[in-house]
Length: 225
Image 1 (cartoon, rainbow, N blue to C red):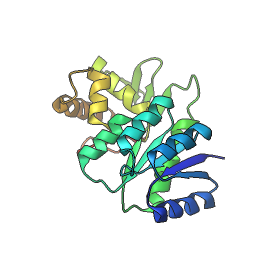
Image 2 (tube, rainbow, N blue to C red; image 1 turned 90 degrees about the vertical axis):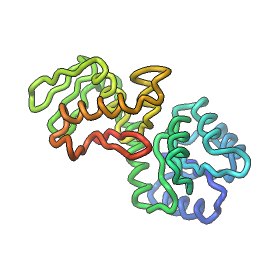
Image 3 (cartoon, one colour; image 1 turned 120 degrees about the vertical axis):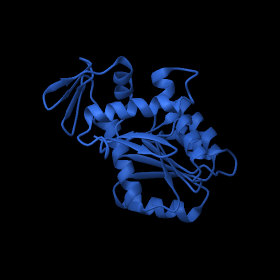
């Protein structure tokens, strides 16, 4: 049974989440603050964490960093903070996704399913990713569209690889710039926009209406297979 830890100091939200998650077969643990969350995670390591940023004893971004230092557990932020800077800080600290309150339960459950697929379906040696008309072979470093090889520059390939290895995950601009270009390029947003446009032109059926390489304004990009 998948174990989900809910970290929030609003009892009504914790109760609603616990009821809905347990009704769908998840095992649920809860914590009302950061210290309790760290203790619960130590005693009963969760498979997924849902947490609020506005905790009474510890900022949620700090809690994300502490959890991430211990494990690679997927973390979904559920917060009333809608400012893009808060979202980027959470993603940079190690969160996998971000949902703003008030939220729809159906959307939240869908995000959880995506996170679970990402953590449970990847098998060693599974190197081929297919989406739309494209086929990407990570081991062979080859990209094909309709059976024809697409030539990618080393930077385009590196950006593509980072995205397809994290399907469904919202990657902040800072994360992508650091991963692909390295330290010192965290604010080179023009580079990222240029190379994302090139990937879309080469791999999307309609680059003007991208389906697989999605932009979330002010936050980052998400690869949807």
